[in-house]
Length: 362
Image (cartoon, rainbow, N blue to C red; front, side):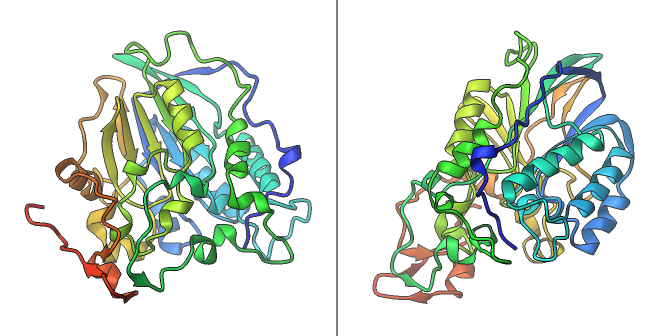
């Protein structure tokens, strides 16, 4: 597989010129990272209860295979009143067995993904949601990660930690397709972010208490929404998960809530007035080995409810990592220590330590 962005100069225009639709509904729900390449996840999807009065936000990572992603969206369209979707990194991978030769790179794959969504009646543009007790606006945001988003210091005193570009598939090449140099700087993330420009204006009252905004993306907007490096199996992961362009866009929108995905951690935290939520289905193995870090609401049973037309936003939900950071301050300056479950994968050198986990009181 590979992700290749050769065609940045001919990037598609993704936002539609159509007027923003207005749709009555009961609940707004969300899910991300459904990874229907996995048979167990396809079974989970097929068994979901139907909620024909609800709207579902899908925050990316359905499949690297467009046909399989299409099948998944058809299943979801059959269960919900409306489905909105943004692509994730997996959705833009180029499969080495890919048969449609007209898709030359990941920017064209992005265009094909959005076209597929439109063909299936899946929205990729904003939607005003109305209900008996109130309204909100749902805003999809396209994004891509860049390494400079990670401004926290790297782990020291431990050997064997790979550079993120050496182990993340997003950076790899296959089938003769190579990444352009821009994949190593901010230019890909900036180019994808610009694709959000040019759409129809939101209603004038959007972003106020009378018409709050729920935005959603695949990637992570803020460092505070990712565990610190000493807690990550791959301590360099932060260099391939987030976008400051995304954060800037959320701030400009004044989103009341933002849904993200990609890192497969349950999360519910409010920062600077915006509530951030992640509800990732992820992989069956993750639920077997680290279930507590995946859980949020009743996610294992079905996509979680974010907002109700009768009562507004749901109360804060417990999630392991966001609950940890509510109690313990972030200390990224601790670079010489790793959590015990991380340390076993690497080699300690002079000054390296193993930190306490879980900490007392958690």
